[in-house]
Amino acid sequence: MSVKQHIIIKGVKDGLIFLLDDQCDFEDIILELKHKLEKTHQQLLSGPLIHITVKLGQRVLTDEQSKLLTEIVRAKGNLMIQGIESDAPAAHKLRAHAQLKVMSGIVRSGQEVEYDGDLLLLGDVHPGGVIRCAGDIYVMGALRGSAHAGMDGRKEAIIVASVLKPTGLKIADIMGQPQTQNEEEGDGLMEYGYIENEQLCIQKLTLLHRENRIPVIMRGV
Amino acid sequence: MGEAIVVTSGKGGVGKTTTSANIGTALALLGKKVALVDTDIGLRNLDVIMGLENRIIYDLVDVAEKRCRLEQALIKDKRFDELYMLPAAQTKDKDAVKPDQMLNIITELKQNHDFVIIDCPAGIEQGFRNAIAGAERAIIVTTQETAAVRDADRVIGLLEQNKIPSKLIVNRVRPAMMKRGEVLEINDICHVLAIDLLGIVPEDEKVIAGANAGEPVAMNPVFKSGIAYRNIARRMLGDMVPLMTLDEKAGTLTKIRKFFGMG
Image (cartoon, rainbow over the protein chains, first blue to last red):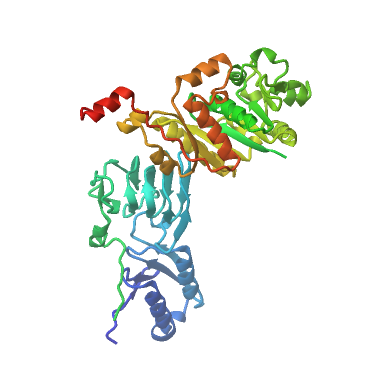
């Protein structure tokens, strides 16, 4: 088989380490894991209790995903997952992009919206209104209040708005200047805020793909 | 069964009490039975603007604490048979009344009146909570100042949380400043606040003069501001009344100048 291995199993003093590829689809990992446990690595399954440490690399799992992973491994009698480790910062608190919440409405002065994931707001944020998210913030409307993305420390988080005129931006623990690059109102270009070299920058949204922050795989004929 | 409408703004000094008095008067002019309620306990003003200050015997707190019946505290207006006012207490503060007491009073007033207009104190604290307790609709008063619009936004948010829909009155409109771009445009204010516009009232010295004389300007259709309040009252009754144009009429001299190409 010329297929690239997504899972590397290593033996260490106190058990086994499963090194998972952090670039491929999670589904591929699950398939390969099942294949390995049931077909190619059956010798692991006989014998004494083995502690497993799963290393995710830069990948971040949702609660559901880690539950699924644990269940598959646990189904085989003598294997026990000791821990799932991720190299991504503060991984335990992070959520994958899968958890996107869509809400509509106006966040008015004095109102706060907080969410433990990515948030898509269909509406405006008025001056004095606040949005806080563990993940990314997308505003289809005018962001004129303040927004704090990656509030649990995720520096890759971004803040996107159709009209980005905030009174304050914050990503992880870095505060940003409220000035956006396009001072002229109405040029119609969406912008986003992100962190580069420990500084909060604003950029046209059309340039987001260059950063490759949210990898998109285009499938087509 | 009438309708209870709270007049509020967040920021002080934008003209809540004046608006309450004039809308109440304009509705009474249209033959409606109206009760005005002053909830600004400790800083009562509505009685002064209505010219009824020397008729006060009992007040809102007396009614809330059941020292008197509601009818005893209601003051009948000098000009109309079906316009009444419930004054606030002057010697207590906002905590003297609780929201459920207010709700009872407003509910009772609604039985016998077509409109119950509640004049809300500035701020968003206890006084505000009292004032909105019995209301089912709100009129937001703002001026063309950014600070007033910001506070209005805050209040609209709080009202939305209490499921009270609101409409907007832009008060003290200054056409000349608007033309020079020194104050917010009315359209922009409506756009920012995202609520319906109920009316605009031009800046007018006669409003202040009327308030001092205890004679709401809505009584007098000679003044633009008086007509503005009457228009608002008509819109509240469902009439379609176009917004008034505020461009000052060009004086004779200006016209002559224009004629000679000097304007």
